[in-house]
Length: 534
Image 1: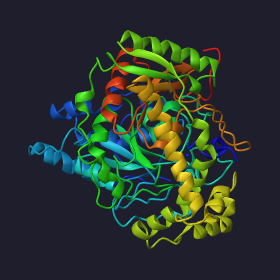
Image 2: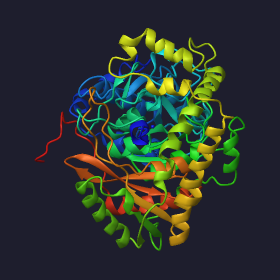
Image 3: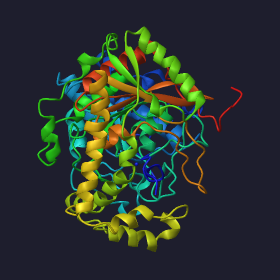
């Protein structure tokens, strides 16, 4: 089985209390897909508007809820939001009181955010990974990431749909579909796929259904939907953001990260999400390495930087290659020194990445269920498989659960085959992969197209991923940020920046400088399909 068939990972909502008036705020404009300047704006702009008394957190929340009602549940029916937080308006109102009293928690104070529905919240919302087996199951407490965002003053207004079990259920899955949430649609062409598995987060932020969203990635699940939906996606170094309370695939590669409309918002959000978590041992390595990242937001962030153009990740599409070549010229204009390189040994972990993910999935899932959902009707992988078989008409109308069955059959984490596969992955993705090429060419980062354009959603043949730049950084556990780079027939294309461990600030500086010089993002207009002549 080829890894690209397995991991291109791409590897309902009730009314909100107190928001009924807001749902009628601007229905005609929202239904027409009109861009609301304040809702399209970023953290700093919305914060300034609140500081000046031009809006409030409550008003922001209510306006986003109205937009969700008009665009996600009606109109183009994006189906990006799987559940709304019934306490969102009350939380925003309390944060407005804090602001009035002179208490500000930071730049995210009062800012609305959506969480992917595999991130636990100890509130009235479910945490289900899109599975009917966990529908209605409330986590016992917040994931560390959710806890950090609340402490920073963010208002969690809801959960986003995803590829069920983070796209780790079937060899023929359709990204953006879950048994609980149905199919999420791409805002740039409704018959196209948003990519997975953070599909809802990508579509929601593209459509301005919230200021910020959190996605999770094992291999491509932040950067691929971000590229396909024309937004910024940031997968951080493994260990910078805690994995506690996130329904897992594999602890050796899983991480949460920001999905935003700008690099500045990603930087501010990442700062709020980080921190050493006593419940997640890998975060100990991040002590002293975090940053507020705001200082990296400099328009000269590319000047003097040596960047390796990863030519072995070109060639998937002549149209995308042509766009990226033009963007490389912008990097040079901004002072970057470009060097053509090849990331070595990327073929050495094709099969072993699959082995590691399958081996870790079963025990990691059982640990999550025991710690955060002990009252759930399923306790382990075997229970999930049995549930799906019993409820096949609802859970498996389009594709099966081959990955779950394969994971159930794998040996424990003390097995020699698993330990050798993990060591192989780290060797060829890190020291003889990204580290090697960056050391030999004295590079600050690598760049390449993030991946292909959004494909037609296809329940017969499944996903149609093209070439992707996600795996080297995903397997290595290194940071990766994608930034909007242009369009092919109206479908977004992303440009990726990848660096060594803990190089988030450097990547943010380069990505920000590129973004400010290029300004390629434009809001979607929700067409039914692609206009090839346009």
